[in-house]
Length: 351
Ligand code: NAP
Ligand code: ZN
Image (cartoon, rainbow, N blue to C red; front, side):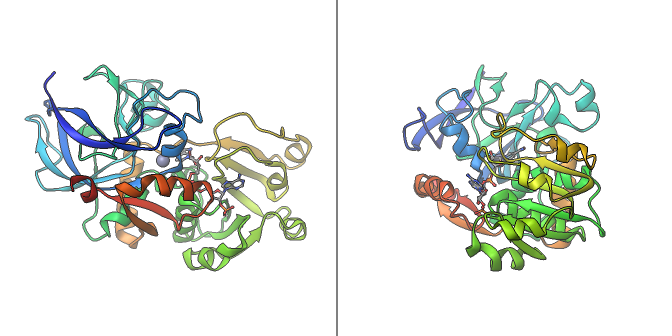
C-alpha cells in the first residue's frame, strides 16, 4: 500500500519519555479522509497506554484520540465531507460494521473495534497511530463534524473525555430531576460536571482535593464533597441516582455505594482492572443498587454530543501546550495537576 511519512510523537518503551519520530500514513483510499491535525487532547489513557499500565501495549506507540483537524484530502468515494471542513476523530477508527452492536450505533462494543492508537491497522498490518502526529487518514464513517462556532482547542477533549461521560449520562436518562455525582475532577470529571449540569441535573463532585472546590462550582457543580472527610461522606448517604467514577487507579468503591439512592447506579469509567478492596454486597442488596461500566460512545452519539456542545456553547477548560512539553504534562497528570485538560497545539510539531 502507498504511504507517506509524517512527523509524530510517541515512545518505543514503557520507561522512555515520548520523543519525535516518523510514522507512515496510508494515502487516502476510496472512502478515506486525510486531516491536517490542529489540536489533540491529552487523555489519561494516553499515559496508561504509553507506560503499558494495561499490559497490552505494542511499541512504538503514538497516543492521542481527541483529534481536531481540517480536511486536506479526500478519496473519490467520500460523500459526507469536503476539503477544508473542520472535522474530528475520537477513540475509534473502524469496526466490523455488521454485528448487532455496530447496527445499534454502539461501535465501541463491537468485538472488532479498532482504536485510534494501539488498534490493528488492516491497511498497514501494524498498530494504529494516534493524534500526536501531523496528519491522520480515517474512513469517513469514523470522522465527525465539528461546529465552527466553538474554540478548536476546547472542543478536542469532547472526543473522549466528553463522550465517555455523556454516554452514561444519556443511557441512565439523566435530566432535570436527576441527582448526579462525579468522582474525581480531572479531564473526564470536569466534562461530566459540565454535561450533567447542562442536562439540568443537580451535580455533586467527590474529590480528594480541597483546592478544587471553587473550580468545580464554576464548572457547574452544585456542591463538593471531600471524599477523605468521613463526616462529609456520612452526610451524603442515600442521595445520588447516578455516580460517574472517573478515578484512574484502584480505589475503594464501597463508601460511594452507600451514597446511592434505592435503584441508584455507580458507573465506572475510570479504572480498568480488578477491584481492590472487593465490593461489599449487603449495601447493594439493601437498595437494589448497581455497579456498572461504560466505554466511550458510538459515532452517532459522539456527533450528537458535538452538536449539543455547539448549541449550548460547551467546550473543555484546557491548558494548551506545545508537543515538546508532553512529558511534563504526563507527570502533572500523575499528580492530579490538570486544569482540566491538556491540549496539544499541533503546530508545534511542524516547527
Ligand atoms: P485525569 O485527568 O488524570 O483525572 C483523574 C482524576 O481522578 C484526578 O484529577 C483526581 O481528581 C482523581 N484521582 C487521581 N488519582 C486518584 C487516586 N489514586 N485516588 C482517587 N482519586 C484519584 O484522568 P482522565 O483523563 O479524566 O481519565 C480518567 C480515567 O478514565 C483514566 O484511567 C482513563 O484511562 C479512563 N478513561 C476511560 C474511558 C472509558 O471509555 N471508560 C475513556 C477515557 C478515559 P481529584 O483531585 O478531584 O481527586
Ligand atoms: Zn481518552
